[in-house]
Figure 1 (cartoon, rainbow, N blue to C red):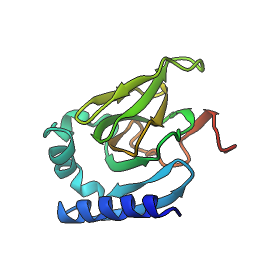
Figure 2 (cartoon, rainbow, N blue to C red; figure 1 turned 90 degrees about the horizontal axis):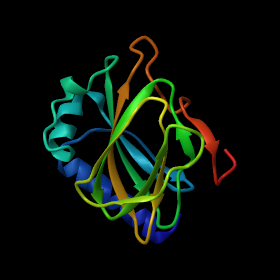
Figure 3 (tube, rainbow, N blue to C red; figure 1 turned 60 degrees about the horizontal axis):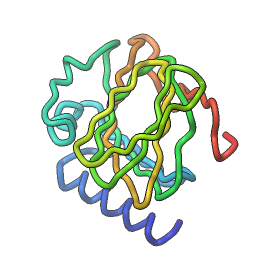
Length: 165
């Protein structure tokens, strides 16, 4: 792992712990960057911190919500993907990122988003998070759409992936 990647993951981990969040999982091995999963019982605290206090009860579709922090490396991009069992809300915390969206397998135009910008992705909507000139940090809340079968990392349908996954 590069020194720069290691430093940003340490900084974000320290920030989350200082804010009182319990990190349920961490993955810094993704080729595009990685993520932190926050304890689901802290969804409202997470929304208060990163989504201007949006009421998490108003976000519930099929039950639970899963808060995460995504870290995307400069000039790296996640797969062009969609999900069967979740919608997502993203809010940029730090840096400038690119996001492509579409309701078909054809990639939409690249739009740039900066701190405090929010994007709501519907279940089934194709999307891709893209690192631009610097590191991007994005708060994410998964809105599980099937209470009996919550979404997980296997609920990713990759239409295109730079890393052959």
